[in-house]
Length: 201
Image (cartoon, rainbow, N blue to C red; front, top):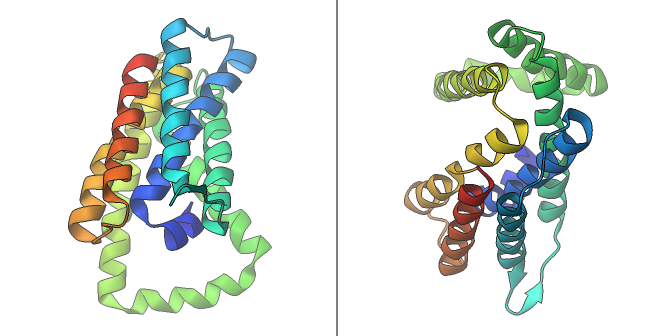
């Protein structure tokens, strides 16, 4: 996901990542016994159209390295939500959060120990402040998300509802990151995703 952000930018990556809701719906049907309705099917079509729209540039389909990273992230996230929903049927959401985030960090360090050298950046007070700020919001998002799953919400409903943040991401990326390339297309895609989310929930 972070590699996709580096290449594509926030708004385009957010729109492509909306496809994770489709992965969650399909895997939740298979593994958790959740049902696919006509409205969910229509929502899936709208989400797919939004991903297709943002991937077409100057009349041609653009499949870049950034797109590949975003799609791998999308599939992984969709499967992860289904897995979370299954685990949280018998596990506490608050204590699950540090496990869900801590174990991947340990695994990444074991796979690529050289990344430990980059921890020197924590000596930079501005960088550290940004990381703490980001960690706070990620933690709040994760705990509330897991609480929603634990309280009995369907994975195939909660995952798409969560993707409603895409419109906000596109707008904030325009305001703060100056991502104005293909702005009309991004806004249209964000609107399609939102409509798809409304049908899915």
